[in-house]
Amino acid sequence: MARPFGVAAVLVVVAGVVLSLLTPDATTRAEVASPEWPTVAPSGTSDQWIDPASAGHPWSDAVDGVTTFRGNPTRSWYGTGPMPVDPAVVWRYPDEPMCARSDVEGDPRIRIWCGTGWTGQPTVFEREGRTWVVVGTYDRHVHFIDADTGDAILPPYPTGDIIKGSVTIDPDGYPLVYTGSRDDNFHIVAFDGDAPRELWTFNAYEVEPVLWNDDWDSNALVVDDHLFEGGENGWFFIWKLNRGYDADGRVTVDPDLVFSTPGWDDELLADIGDENVSIETSVAISGDTVYFASSGGLVQGWDISGLEDGVDPTRVFRFWTGDDTDATVVIDDEGYLYVASEVKRPTERGLELGQIMKLDPRRPDDPVVWSIPDPFERGVWATPAIHRDLLIVPTDGGLVLGIDRATGEIRWDVFLRGPTWQSPVVVDDVLVQGDCRGGMLRGFDVSDTSVQPPQIWSVELGGCIESTPAVWEGRIYVGTRGGFINAVGERDVPDGPLPIIIAPGGD
Image (tube, rainbow, N blue to C red; front, side):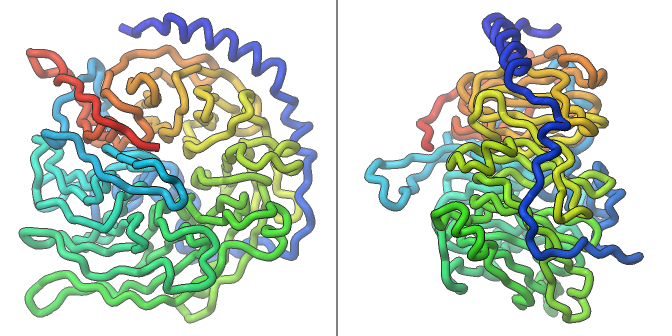
């Protein structure tokens, strides 16, 4: 039975009034043209890196599971059902909250970070007859968990600082996890023995100049033995991994940096008036083009069609949103880009364009199909989700919007206790969305995309839910700022849900 919204129901009505007042006609926004930058249309070949038609489908033929943030290179797949009908917490990992200190440069406050945050999605996959959950957390470790029991499979792997982003599991079956950390380094870690072992790191200061900082929040993609990654140092990288096995059967890598480029240009720096050009968005690939955005608001596409033949990528798409764009670019099966921005530096461009947009990279001089503003004028941190003819977008202010993908019309909205940074996932016509202040994970029926979705269940997890869930075969795996990883499945614990433990949180 759906739990009533109570006060939230009143707020939904208010939000609907706000939307009717503030949402312009989509055709008006579509008339906003980008400046004319020197670009050419993305190329297409018969043997593309990623088939655009793979959008919305599982990624790997070699590994059964959710191996990367939002499931595939177009960032548009969320896992498999069946979704639980009467869900509850079936296990919580570990026994004590996972917390660590991590200070922000120039900030005198002591920062204690617990659990998982943005984006923090676990990976869930099958290996040697066992289902694994692997996740990076704020206690500075990568954890390897049995999905059935919630017990540790391997000892946690320590990094030098907290892990904010989502880890990637090698999609070709190599026992490798790829993860960034706030310790300045991007790591490749093997898990083919009794304990994880580090094989390789890359330091953010191995390139220069570094315009912002040394974090690695972006989630990496591995495609055809190539690693694609963006850094908060503002740079975009491609490595040839050269994966293999040694004489003892242990996995090896020997990464070769085959391409790197600053993710900014002089025009961007002049437009924004600062140097916050970090790449926190996760890279996405469709066809022969890799896409990413930056905190400077620059959305780029780079042609990688000649990469395996030694031809350097070339930039084929450049679009400025006008403001911080950390949400990942999502790509549909027709190659359209869905982009969401924050409201941090209210430039004329950002205010005119709005914060949620659909772009056509085949029209680089005028790519805006439609664009709309966030009604609460706070913008979007979460990565949008594609569901049938809808784009589902949670905003920082707590509004979850259901937007017609073709027209940009807002069909419905649901108001939650923001900030809503968790990227939405949809499996079996159930939208899973968490909130922050209440720590409530909710399920909504989105089988009819034309109406406001009714809430069909809720589970209190304790602690802000910033992280994106992974859904796999009847269970939902998600961490919170309360300090734990939770497995939510069909209620089968006779004594009720586990006790909620609230741990100190950080920013």
